[in-house]
Image 1 (cartoon, rainbow, N blue to C red):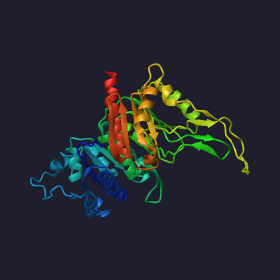
Image 2: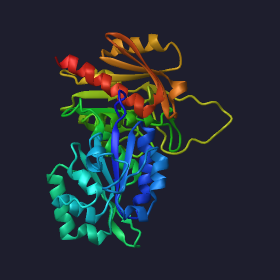
Image 3: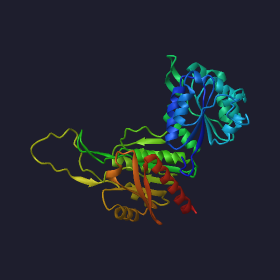
Image 4: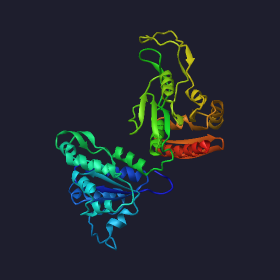
Amino acid sequence: MATTAKPHVLLGITGGIAAYKSAELVRLLVRDGCTVQVVMTEAATRFVTPVTFQALSGRPVYTDLWDGRIADNMAHIELSRPAQAIVIAPASADFMAKLAHGLADDLLSTLCLARECPLLVAPAMNRQMWDHPATCRNADRLAKDGVVIAGPASGDQACGEVGLGRMLEAAEIFAQVRALLAPKPLAGRRVLITAGPTFEAIDAVRGITNRSSGKMGYAVAQAALDAGATVTIVSGPVTLPPPVGARVARVETAAQMFDTVKQNLAGMDIFIGVAAVADYTPVKTEKHKLKKSNAGMSIALKPTQDILAHVAGRPRAPFCVGFAAESRNLAEYAQDKRKRKKVALMVGNLAQQAIGADDNEVILFDDAGAHKLPRAPKAEVARQLVAHISKLYKLRKK
């Protein structure tokens, strides 16, 4: 989310067993710095009580169109106007039908009709209800009206059946809400990102690698998606789920990453090399496991291709950003790397403070000097980094 002001999200909850997931959605939004106002239908209160959402959001929950706490009795106006986005999760088949046909017979449907902000609905219903022609028509109508339809997913349902109709998980909805609220300085731009480590095999079971979880690269990809970019990730071996909406090409070795980057460069506007690429690879890889003995062992190594330098040195190269993970002399080494590889921006961090952690502290080095970003969750660092990249990219284009 933007760091200058707290985004205000109105979360509408309708009747359905998936309402329990909405508690986690509130928690994620609040933790990310949002103000969350919860509005529930009467049916929703049969599944989870308003007290739960009041405790999680820190704000009173509204259920009644005629709520006396609103001085002018216009709850649908007073509650909808501050909202930067309205999110309905879960959105029942009945409520989607109301929205599609402009019906307004309770607080939630009325404020949706009176809104001046984007609307996102996360459907949740039995698979046959989702597949029914009426629901299909309503979903199509809502999409044509500009409503964002998040999901549904396929899987086990509370009724015991399996199929489309499950509400997305809270984290997936949260990602879409964050993207909905974020500024779009990279709208229409194509971004290629490398992430994670590479693995250079010595034999059938051993290899050389860098300690990298891929968390920073995937966070940068999510921030670029939130900023409106079309994102491709060339990812080394990681255990992270890819950001929703990104195209992912999975590789293992530095050579595979180099080749895959070259294959995907055409038409890219920005290249961000976050991956911890091995600098050396064995000259020869043994087909079978080398057996241990009391004798010493030497392994001949050769340098790998420098992906960032290659991309930056191409004719009509994209706007290039590199990462420098150092264990000492960060400013000296990062600045030297930026100048040698002739890139617009180098992101420096101390490896011992960042590897595997959920937060990070980086320094951005560009033509204007050094810009330190305070230690923060990697998602927040990534958002600030992408904002800086967007600014430099626009200046370069001018």
